[in-house]
Image (cartoon, rainbow, N blue to C red):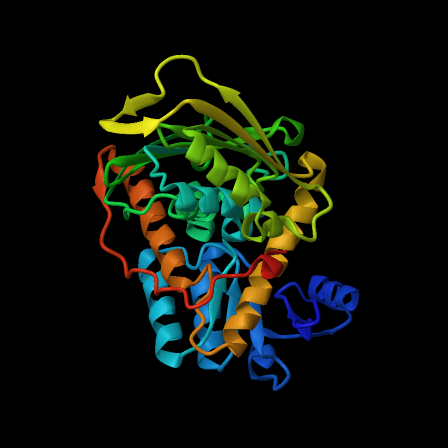
Length: 381
């Protein structure tokens, strides 16, 4: 990626920082020195969540743009302060919500937009591994991580808003943990978005080899099923009329969709069509639609074996997005501080709802700015 090159590494663990700097072919230094270095244009923050806001704000005040690991901050107040500071200083902040750069999710977004689909329900289930998370890991210290909803759930609170157009208004949640554990290891939240419900379940209770993740978007007349927390496989099941089938086939063959996975060897899109017995028209939730044809659209980025490659490609796309926002006046990032702040707000509401055992209203967050230039297919990967 010629637009981005590492210059310095700063780590409170100096020996570890020195090793990483050597591997990256750059110099090791301190945070303070990095922020005043003339050859540093942007700062990557890859630290525990409770440090994100302080480091991001220091970088912004030093005149640096920021690429921040999610969440933007551990609390809504810190997220709002960071977003407001970036806007007041006209600096670029990209938050590493990698789902926004994933070709499968962007392909489903594209189909949803072209067919005029509206989600009835969004579901995400995450059976994640805890083999590498011993009891004393900072992940279990809610003062450091913010808890599961904040540290990890923000990915999917944010991902839901890629498909659900109405903002979150309320959250109900529950949590539990194994006996004697310092914090919850299994949580569920249901978020109300207008007339759509989004349910998010996260557990850190599995062996690595037993991890499972499923995202499901229910449109009534259609359904999307996406596998992997780094999505690598997806299936779209659609009931359409002949005009809808023609639209889907044209879209699948178009550069707009076919180009999204450019650069990944495993990228494949296929369509299977079948006649449906019965009436040519159907109705669900009061809406009539043509349903004489059933389409199955399969999308693949190469399966489980490609997960790390896809993850790296999504991060690279986010970094290119940061570079594009630095060089193109008026361009807004696909994953910027406003959408990231909104995810932190919902995560905080979920944490409080689980503790209070009642629904919590979601305060109104600043709406994302209109995107002057979405990523092109070339920039995605």
